[in-house]
Image (cartoon, rainbow, N blue to C red; front, side, top):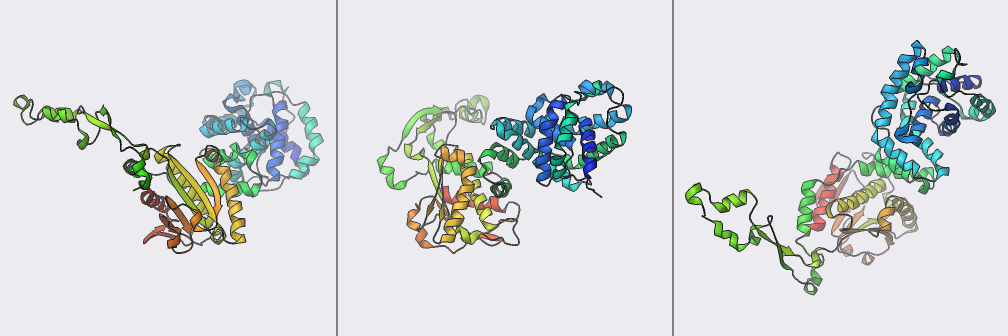
Length: 474
């Protein structure tokens, strides 16, 4: 059963936690920053996090893989009773953290932020990594008000804090019972600290922390990103089929007569049989008297030595593909079906973002343009669309800056181009819209024509996206 630390217990607890740290640097220099991280975390509700873990992970985020281990400096001075738990902590926790690639990614993201934001980012990162485990364990709970009121006493204690255990003369000014308590508290967290420290969504948050205007925005984006991450990328077979088909179909049939049809411009050992170099036929039946049932043509085919003409494609086939995705009546999508994990509008946002990522995967960063629009016919739609555009703009900021994505609003269907048009709506198909793909959303099953897709089931959203891609490009 967890208990709350009394005010008079806070300073001895902080001393014990600091004493048990696995950091091999000067604690007098690192502890003041760590106490700032601890105050921020306790204030955000992570009041069961101990100072030693907050300190060690925070310093590791600041230093990256240059984090020094305490055992390299203080192993000989550790009492026998402490040596086992301390080495176990370095082996099971700190050693795994320092090799975690997501920690290095987080370190790089934080280092790229403005200096005044870095402590905030470190505290936020520690909360993301350790917060869930601290809430699951039976740990003592602190009070951020005590940290503020005891600030002078804590600062005074830190001024004389030695650099390491080797500088203690005899026993340190920390009670053995408190040391045992700190080691036991830390052990309760071990089971909850398996796996990688940071998810891709965590790393995105850290890199864009400066751009996130509020906590509500951060949480809303986290929900959208979680749904996007839950959708697998387009499969190789689907991507190859779409890419091959796109190379055979002109971008705009109406303007085909303005472009050259293309001709043959080179030779290759790969191609279709209708493009086979005619002289290759001369190898048919050659060498059969020596090789029996096979001839030189068969040998050259098996070894990939046959020659094929390659086409000089018309520029009509190389132009960027354009996809227009319209979210119809955003205010109507702000409801949650009981069988789905998230609000319908969040799922539609995730569908749009994953479709844009699929286009990049299939055609490359410069091969397609994605135009995301919100159709608004009421003030409620306009308000919801403005909020959603603000969220999505943060996620797609780089794509917008490179003119690969545009965001905007439409009121009437004739404002949205019909070529490459995908519409997500709670309403039935409107023939006036001229959509290439109309996705009926709002229930636990979404529909395209007569096909139903259980988007709440594993693979359901991916199957829907594959259908959209095929309808757009095949």
